[in-house]
Structure formats: C-alpha cells, structure tokens
Image 1 (cartoon, helix red, strand yellow):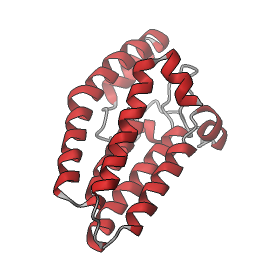
Image 2 (cartoon, rainbow, N blue to C red; image 1 turned 180 degrees about the horizontal axis):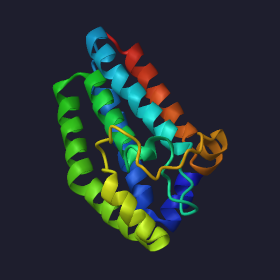
Image 3 (tube, rainbow, N blue to C red; image 1 turned 60 degrees about the vertical axis):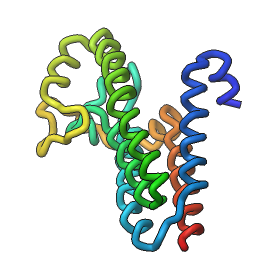
Image 4 (tube, rainbow, N blue to C red; image 1 turned 180 degrees about the vertical axis):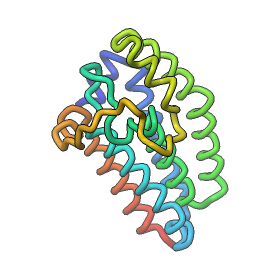
Length: 188
C-alpha cells in the first residue's frame, strides 16, 4: 500500500524502492553462502542494523538538529549503516555475481546516491538550522566517525517512539532479519 502511494505521489522514490528490492532479490537468487562467508558478513549486517537503529531513535527530522547518539560522532549514521548492510550481505552471498552486484551497489552509493543526498540534505538542513548546522557539519564528518563526541552534542537518550513511529526503522530490521535467515538457509 505504501509503495503504491509512493509510486503515485513520488514516482522516482517509488522506483528506487523497486530497484532496491530487485537488487536484494537478485542477490538472494545468486547467493551461495558458505559457513565462512555467512560468518564473515554477519557482523557487518549486525553493525548496519545496529547503527541504523541507534540513529533512528535519535533522529527527529526537521524538528531539531540530531547531535545525540551516533550523530555526536558521525553526521550520516543512517548512510553508514546502509553501507555496512550492503557490504555484509554481499560477503554473505559469496558468489562472483553477487560480488559484482555489490561492487555496482557501492559505485551507485558513492558516485550517485551519497553526492546527491548530501547536496540536497546540506541545503535543506542549512536552511532549517542555519549556522548551528554549518558549525556541526564543519566538525563532524559524513561517514568517518570522530573519536570523541561533537563538543556541542545533545545528551538525549535513544527513543523507541522516535525509532518506531517517526522513522519506522522496524521495517528495515525485519527485512534484514528475513534476508539473513534466507541466506542462512541457503548455506551449502
């Protein structure tokens, strides 16, 4: 239902959802995981889900600048989590074809997705939060975490309501768990 609505109201966003789903199904169909590849990729998948979940419990889009939780260390933890998931599932799947798909996914991530998203988000966040965001952006890198928290970070705690109701991250958790289960069942 949500996908149909997205296709009608934001066709490009809906198409992206379809392409990501097709990518995931292709990886699943081509996957030939071994116990070693599964165990090598699993920590990356867990890290991706954990980082995204941690971030989603702190992000109140357009209401306040997120500087608590992982945002005190890295500016784009949701993207960092996505990167971990892409690499983790590629390693788990363990075929030449899935490594090629993973490399294509990384190319799209770094050459198209990240530059476009960062341009749009930087402009939007600077428009909403002004100098506060400019100062934050200057001190906190996009994907490489700081070793210490951003000096002006918020000390707010993780919120299950923000995670569940505002960011709906539970669906990514369920999708990652389902994909992990299917890959575990395919271990040869």
